[in-house]
Amino acid sequence: MIKNTFLFLLLSSFTLLAQSQTTTTIAFGSCSDEDDTVQLWREIIRQKPELWIWLGDNIYADTSDRAVIKSKYDRQKNHPDYQKLLATCPVIGTWDDHDYGVNDGGKEFPLKQQSKELLLNFLDTPLAADLRKHEGMYSSYKIGEGEKKVNVILLDTRYFRDPLQRSTLPGSRYMPTDKGDMLGEEQWAWLENELQHSDAAINIIGSSVQFIPTQHGYEKWMNLSASRERMLDLLKKYKTKKTFFISGDRHIAELSRLKVKGLPYTLYDFTSSGLTHTWDAGTEENKYRIGELIKQKNFGIIRIDWSGTRPEILFEVFSTNGKKYLQYQFSY
Image (cartoon, rainbow, N blue to C red; front, side, top):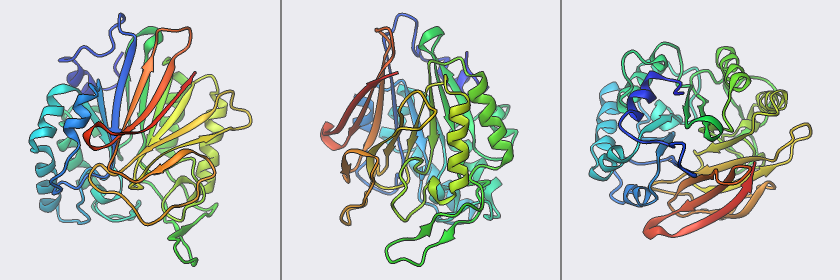
């Protein structure tokens, strides 16, 4: 039922998606400054999540100093409201760049193994967990039973990622190239195995950087276009395994939708980013966006209703004081 010893230990104290339940609620977010005095943990707890997913920038370290990284994780973890979340539901996660140790960093970062160890300790990952036995932060977690099973697949878009191509255009940091890889062959093989053997009704792929958007000039899968195409080919290969993406990094929230030839369902990328601070410099183009660009502090909620003949999925974005900025529903 549960992929990792780590999640088994976490979930043993919680009743997560019993057969009699008709709804699964998962919360996620990214970009949380451990020193910010305004946190959203109370708002998140009010949504009664059965699982919290960190999608990166879990702290703002930007250093190779192990002691500094640890102290920042300690401040984040010891926040009284975050402690209440830990008592409410299991917590899993991956990283992005600022918690990895270097802004926009990839495989060249020399202290990535030490950084991984600190994140695993922050997540209370047991010493015997599979996640500690391989390089990188990729992992998967199955929750639920039978036809109400969800497979959460968390990718590592840092540890193995090749360098990006710098852009010469104003207001743009990177430009697409067909050279280089996002995940590394070991992670690609693991991901294919996850999709091929998944018996879940829904697969959720967590990527710290956005998968669907192509137009902005910052980090995204399109910067390594061959990897983006490889992912689409993999989804088409296992086209009966219904999958959507969640992402962070951007200090915004938005929902992107893509029709893929050869894929019998619509692909979504649900971005929630800016737990403590957001980007507010104007607007940006995203031809795949549904609704508005959300620039308030935010977290994402996924609600899966199992009561009908097909799962009904609701995406919601919440901010301070319970303010809702997005509500979008579809069925698989």
